[in-house]
Amino acid sequence: MADVLQMRVSELAAARSDAEHAYQAKSRFLAAASHDLRQPVQSLVLLMALVEQQTANPEARSTLVMMRKALDALKSLLTSILDVSRLDAGVEAQPEPVDLAAMLRRLALEYRPKADEVGLVLRVAAPDWWATADPALLERAIRNLIDNAIRYTRTGGVLLGLRRRNGRVRIDVVDTGIGIPRERQADIFEEFVQLNNPGRDPGRGLGLGLAIVARIAKLLGVAVELHSNVGRGSRFSLALPGAEAALATEEGDAAEFEDPGGRVLIIEDNAIVAHSLERVLAGWGYETVTASTGEEALRLAEGECWRFGAVLTDQHLGAGLSGVDTAREIVRRSARFLPVLVVSGDTSTEGISMIAASGFQIMHKPIAPEALRRNLARLLSE
Image 1 (cartoon, rainbow, N blue to C red):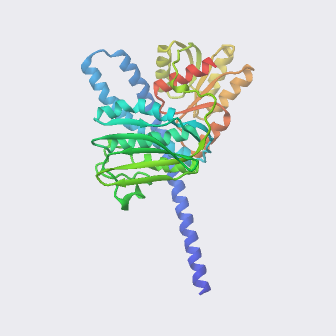
Image 2: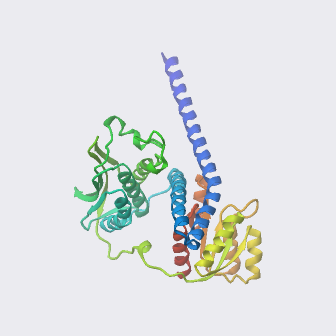
Image 3: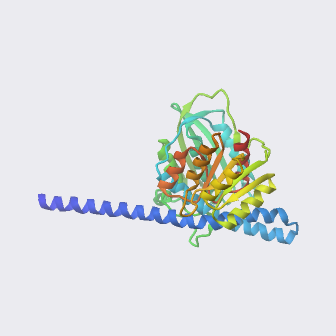
């Protein structure tokens, strides 16, 4: 009996080890595939923005709209893979008081045009309540829930609401959509699981949104509540610890900004991406100097007497110095504070953790032009 039990324990241990190795292999594959795809997609995103600025012909603009939708679907896939990789990398929640009503109203303002396009009403019922959470992670989770609600609701609408009970504030995303059968409600939180999309239409999502919500909820120390009836709709909820209102809040992303101009050192080993960045930044009023390697960047920066307002660098620059190493050396040699923005297509656990540890600001490819514009303006205005 003892021998049989020991054999069974050994089999279970081996099976667990195999499963862990398979999970790690999957993560490495997703990270590698995502990184290789991000460079050409980043080029397309930047070049698309340039073409949109240069094209006035209505027929051509109509074609560009369709191209933009196709590119957005690809960006969505890569962003979702990045989110999964980041959460698997051991990201820690940074809890603080969050103005939930302000967040929901801002998101409703952003998503209302999308709801209007498909004939849905997007409403907010949110008293001025606060909760303790990591605001960036929480917003990502709510965005995924809103996206899902709009995507799977044909008539009626979506409600963003708040309820308070026993010291907790519950965020509700309620829809009048197709509903989820009880026997499939656990499945939808798995990666790449989709209901009612047998043809894998990318316009109806990629099957990663709710998997990301589940991971974020775990990081926040809460559970995702789901109540759904087929044909009547669904309610997804997150119940967070309540918090006292902070004295002041800043909605930095919603604030107006101006391009401050100045000189930016671009370090990018992909010639198409580098050229696209030069053109885009020039359109925003920046003067640029470009290097393709870390070593070249150091020579150029020294020759320019370190006269740059910011450094915009890719992380992977070939066989030489990395972007982070190059930026550190530039800051050290210039002996002054210099804003650094590191862009990367690396979704590996090690890569994300290493860049985060540098203290430099990070953006992940493919970068939307307006997001890049806002971040550069903020860096150069600090």
